[in-house]
Length: 103
Image (tube, rainbow, N blue to C red; front, side, top):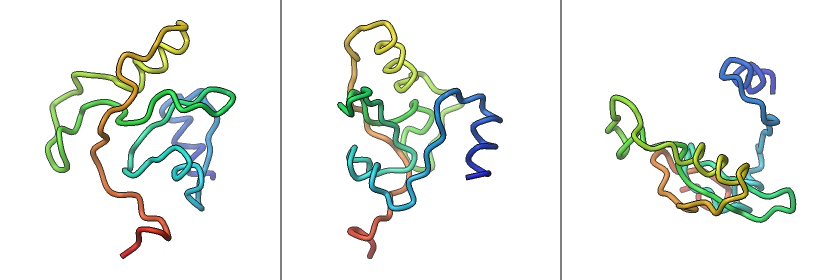
């Protein structure tokens, strides 16, 4: 938890830091890739799931800088009371290992 809190402070996150060692939240929202983001309502409705941005076109193929900011755009839409334009995107990264899908 200390490491996660340091990371949040370093990157100036203002949202709560949550650890999910049993992967129950990840399973609940349907996350399958690290990193994959989810935006939920206070009642738990999933509004967005997918990549943070498009910095990685695919595993091992990094752009000089992202051209889209999918998570930021989704959060901004929620703040403004608008519909999220693209509620699902494909995250690029490593598969999440859970007890159900470990080889």
